[in-house]
Length: 299
Length: 141
Image (cartoon, rainbow over all chains, first blue to last red; front, side, top):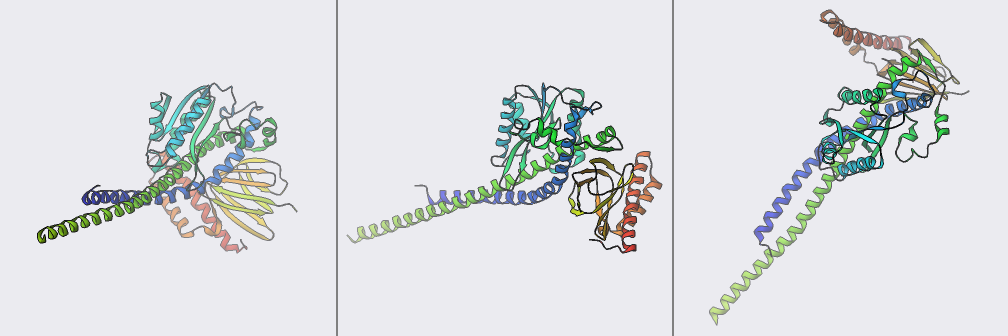
């Protein structure tokens, strides 16, 4: 049986751990609130923009003067934008994200180039020998449209030049504080919304695309409008994905740290019980010694 | 009679979701009024005033640019920035005008000058819309 002193030392150490995880929980909680707020606030804009663009997309295949970003080609090369946190201690989030990306890469037989945003994804992709085209880190604390422009520039340039024929984004979709879903979304070419989500790609048929197509009146003109709208759309979608990823990261971390704190407190309870038992038995032993000693003297 | 469903969203927030009778917006080719049953339309929005008519009431918004989509009696305005007229802080707009004017005077390069001119225009626009709103006392929402 461990000595009273050993148990005391362990309790102390677990208490210190609990203090740290509690502090991390609180930091994550405050960051989470801000991140969630931003994510939810900009979601309507991103969603509406996607709606508008998905209506436009159906026409693209028939259009003659189509914008380079609306061209659909046979998919030979795929660009995968992998958005992950920079840091760990997020429970299962990082693992799930990397697994989702890996699954996506394995399912795709075509050549894939990866852009990673976040250190965890970078390490994962490099470790597994994927072709990594660009690496972005430390985006999470300063997420803004202007900061993601370098990412979208690569995406737009590669797609417009024909170096890649499809661009997918992997990120953690923020559903709630408890639930974050690793999601693959097709960014380019732009497809009607239902089709861009994973799993539904196979079910969306031509008629659905047709239904989405609307003959718009364009002002001032279609090319001018597309020139303005499309780059902004890409920026906005990547920005939204990043916001979702940040909200997910902070939520996951807060929950993970809360669990850790609770476990530590539970452990302290168990150890305290053990400590009391050990103390009790050492007192009993001492008493026995004394009683034994007295008995020997008297005898 | 059919109504138009309007939503105004900016990157920061969803500003408005409502059913109205008419939308008047500054399109890139001039001001345009949209009534129910309008044909599908996609246009850029110039800086200006968006007016919404509902019954006898009218409300107004300042917008600095963006896109407008009309489809199936739904009007969606993707605004770069937008504000409800009665939310505009007149004092702040005035201060912004002064600041922009000084920036124009002091502007060392063409790029800064352009920035400052733009921000002057934005501030002047907001002020104009806010003043107009208060001056006429049109019942808003």
